[in-house]
Length: 268
Image (cartoon, rainbow, N blue to C red):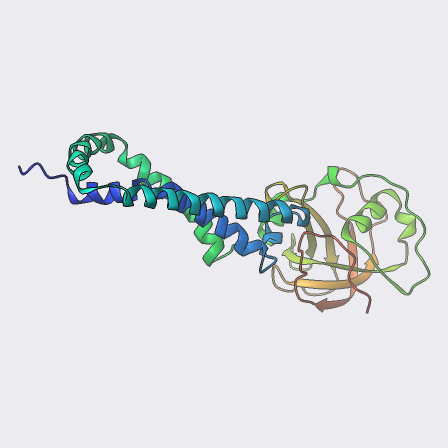
């Protein structure tokens, strides 16, 4: 035995002081990448979270670079005389790392989410989530609904349409309504669902709003469409607020900038 530490021990010692700052930099860069140059963050959180995400990204990046600077400065201050003492300490550290090296390696897994945001941002929630979640009965609150204006077709937010169908169905009787949402498969070949997902804070608390469609063959899952039609259900129970619609016109459209903002489709 030569008394020299293993090569991988030297490698771990080289990275031991750099790991935490690098993780901070990666995480901060990932947050800034999905907020400042793009709207990718809207796939995961509400739009109002933007300033907090940017501030967090800046803070994490600054702290990470500061940590890297401090560590590199410390290493530059080491002298040749200190290197001899470092060999003795290295032998001690090697024994310590032997017991905790696995924890250090596991810590690097924290870099995976940041790298995912930087390289391959996950898409927004879609038909898979809507099909699993079902309809959120508690999400449609009773409110006062005025009669609709005399327009031939009324663009309407999904939540308002469902609320009217549950609590004020007479306001929809015989009226053509235009809705915007994405497609998911129905219970049979002749039915499909138009869905919207709404957030309270982030994608983890998304709830589903859906309308059952009839009369037109279903587009592919996750296709965004505008649907013009007439409600067919005379009564929609509060415990299962899924109204049915007979489709007259179906128009594929591009996904909206904010997929979780339940707004009426644009006029035209």
